[in-house]
Image (cartoon, rainbow, N blue to C red; front, side, top):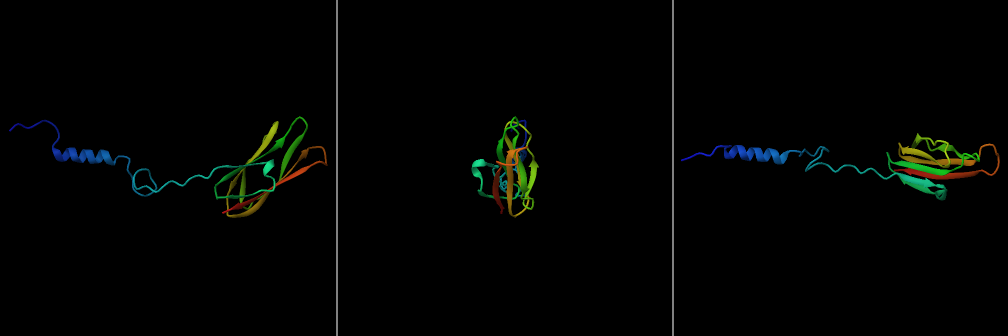
Length: 138
């Protein structure tokens, strides 16, 4: 009886099984079959002047951007009055550019708070507009 050169059948089966299991990991949150599904990152909420007075619900870790009008040539800009600091962390303050100012916050704790902004010309004491956004983190 003539024997073929190569692997014996048991070695071939073991190699095939090892190859099939490459990339498979346990149910410990790693990739592969049996892995726990990854937590979905909630979308960034975007608020602008049209949302004035709006209440929004967020999840811990979720981000919110507030975009308000600005015009550097005329001195019109907005200032953050109250940042809802118990529930939100300010991650980015706006640069002074024409068009809009954008603040970015991240929800850090469960609770409620208000984002309050005061907008107007820097040197003018009147004709100011206040914007308010109620935030609830659950």
